[in-house]
Amino acid sequence: MFKGHHQMVAEYEAAADRLTLPPGSSWAGVPKAEPDAVFETGVGVNTAQMQWLCSWETEWISQRGRDADREERALSQLMEFPSTSFYQKFLDDNGRTFYDEYLTKARLGDPEGFQEDISANCQGG
Image 1 (cartoon, rainbow, N blue to C red):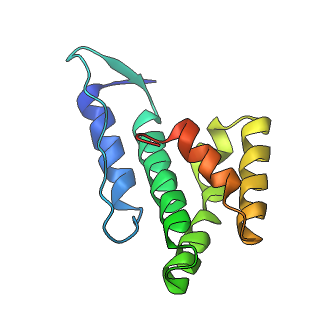
Image 2 (image 1 turned 135 degrees about the vertical axis):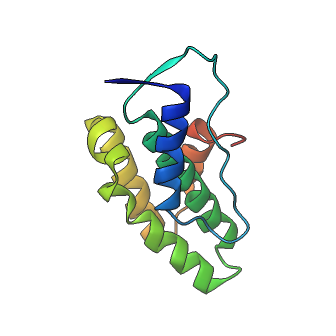
C-alpha cells in the first residue's frame, strides 16, 4: 500500500513517539518531498528507526570512556534494534549479519562496526 507525504509524516511521528533518543539528541524529521509524492507503507517507521539507531550508535561511541552510565544505556538501546521492524523486515541477511557483528564488537568495547555504520548510513556521519 502506498501513502501520501502527509500520511508518511504521520507514520514517522507515531514511530518517533514510541522511541527514545539519547540526551541532547533530536529527531531529524523526514526528507522534503513533492506534494504528490507517494511512499510505501513503512517508510516513515523505517526513517524513525534508522534515526534512532544512528543516534544511539553515536551516543555509544561518544560516551566510551567518558560516562559509563550513558555508555551502558546506549549499548542497552542498541541491543534492542533487532526487535525493530527495520531490522526484521527490511534488512537482508547480510545487513542483519553485519549489525550482529557490530553489536558483538561493541559488547567487547570495539567501536569499529558502529563507526563504519555511522559513516555509511547516518546523516552527517
